[in-house]
Image 1 (spheres, rainbow, N blue to C red):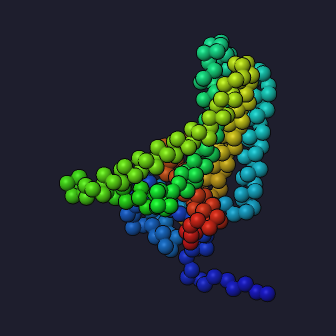
Image 2: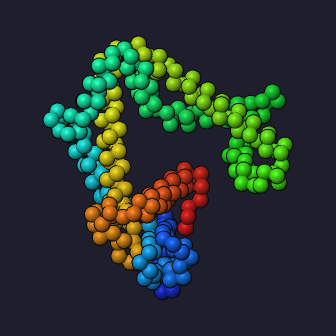
Image 3: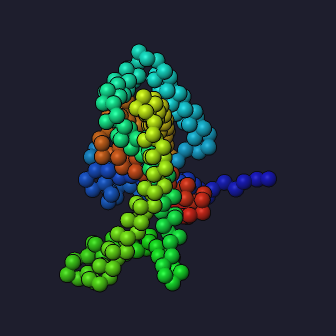
Length: 283
């Protein structure tokens, strides 16, 4: 079996499904030296950053993930060493909390429960969207479109905005948010009540484990993103890496780093939704 090679005039950028451009700097978005469709970047303006970002392929993903897992494991080991800086700092924070005695319990319980905030929130959203009105219709079936319309109206001149529609939408969205908050709080209450029955010493031990897990997971995310950006952020689709080393990357302007971060989050989110059947890919 043979595989046809791409036509010679096929832009290389089109061969990568999960990719996007990032343009940073005054006038960078409209720079005529860059052709996104053709995948060319001939810009020499020192104030412009034109970066082509793509998600790693399966081999790169495996290598990056393994390196990130190793970073996570190293971070967790640091906390098992009582003399490490990370362990000393965390234990000092926990000792200060424990010194408050019973007065510290509400704050500890809230932090422990908050770990599952997003899970509770997503489940609450799903539950609220099934709520029915008196006629049996789902009250919030079209809440995404309602929110989109609200944003459109919010951007209008108040004098030109349809007052009745605006008022009805605000009330509807407020009712939705209130219902989600109530559902989320109800879902978390049993865990909150159960934790409140424990003593401060036990809660402090649980808090230490939670903070260690969160910091180790954060280290994984940080290492994965760093290696992903170094590997997959190029000056153009067939160009060299945009950052020669980790040292070069970490010295970049904060706005540039934030836009790179946003680009990868968008690519990863779109890829995940596409895999779940929730959105088309960005070819």
